[in-house]
Image (tube, rainbow, N blue to C red; front, top):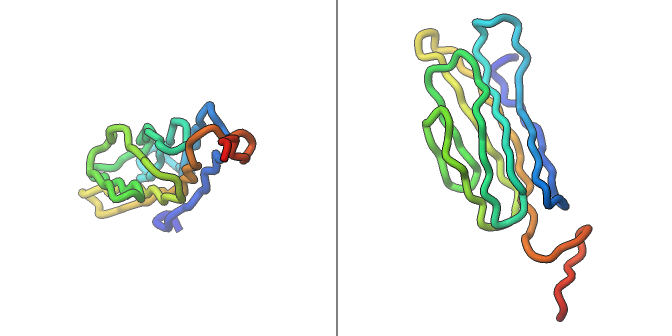
Length: 125
């Protein structure tokens, strides 16, 4: 079942240091095609995250960042998430010579920005 999407949640609700989560697929030998990526950055809105492609043996790539932004670059530019919410990021990888493909997905939980501590809003009313 290599070609099924893997969805791995990334939850960094209350962190000011950021997080990194790598989405990887098992490799049985060095010629196997597989999609894999990691994400770095503080997931508090407005967030600017760096996605790193760790895929192997792919020739064509398509990223969908879940926020209306898509690209076909192997290594995308940093991606902005101006508001909070759940965003599904998907990387589709294809070997055009063999028509094999693989997909890796992750769910990002971008938290609200502002002076929050342990989930409590410290703003005065």
